[in-house]
Amino acid sequence: MDSDEQAASALTEAVVASFAGAADARTREVLEAVVRHAHALVRELRLTREEWRQAVDHLTAVGQACDDTRQECVLLSDVLGISSLVEAVNGEPEGTAGTVLGPFHLTDSPVRALGDSIDLVGTGTPCVVTGRVTGPDGAPVSGASVDVWQCDEHGFYDVQQPEVQPTGNGRGLFTADAEGRFRFRTVVPSPYPIPTDGPVGRLLNASRRHPYRPAHIHLIAAAPGFRTLTTHLFVADSPYLDSDAVFAVKPALVVDFAEIDDPEQAARHGVTAPFRHADFDVRLVLDDPGEGSE
Image (cartoon, rainbow, N blue to C red; front, side, top):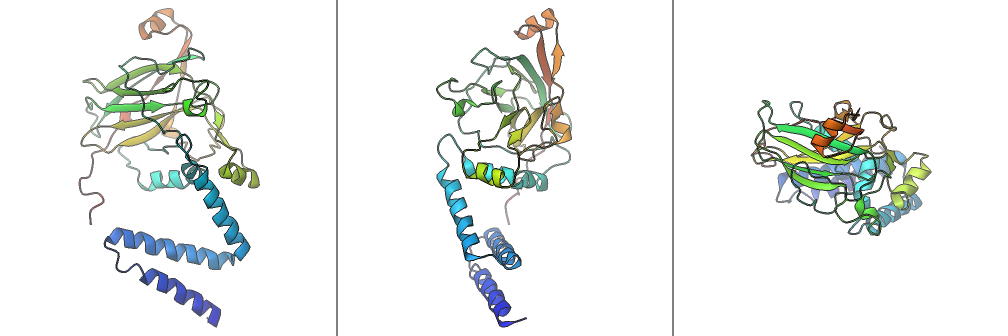
């Protein structure tokens, strides 16, 4: 090892040692690992001063792009696959697969009654979503909360078009019945590009990656005693299922939005025929009260 390598190694160890007094063991472990990996990356790439300045400028721009209706930091995590990787390493095989939160869960979903519509605009292909929340043993989770949000048929969320869509369009907070069942009316969502007018978009352009996500509905299911689940329902016939810009598609979450041309069924659901119907059961896992403790 030459003198430059020795100095670099000594620097890394000095920074790692600086966290020895951290009050929380997990905080110390994370910071030490981040430093070791980041320093190793700099040495591996022989990062230049200009490249590091560009990296700092990019991260600064990502933070500056965040506001009350936009979360560019989440978007960066998503397009780098980090959000999906966090879900993967925390996955529970006995429960429904989790996926990314995404950058558009920025406002509270309005409380709605079972069967209500989350479509406040009245356009697009009518759709009915039904499902059931259970525990790992298949028993129903009575009173589970089911928070859903989605884009409209043109691929935009309400927070992206405040002058076009009423606040709360495409969003709803439902409470499952005694059998764990939930249902709501909506429209079939569309594939859409993630925002590309900011620093994350410039990253995608530089790497010649497309920005599109397949059509999907977001869902968060929660109940006391169970781990909160964040997941998606992906429309089975949607484009981009094999190239989601944020790497969130999992086979078990691809759901058939079947077309039904039956006026009687449509009337029972409060929609017009033909309509699409998706059925998606959610299995929660028991919460670990000791998780996060030392």
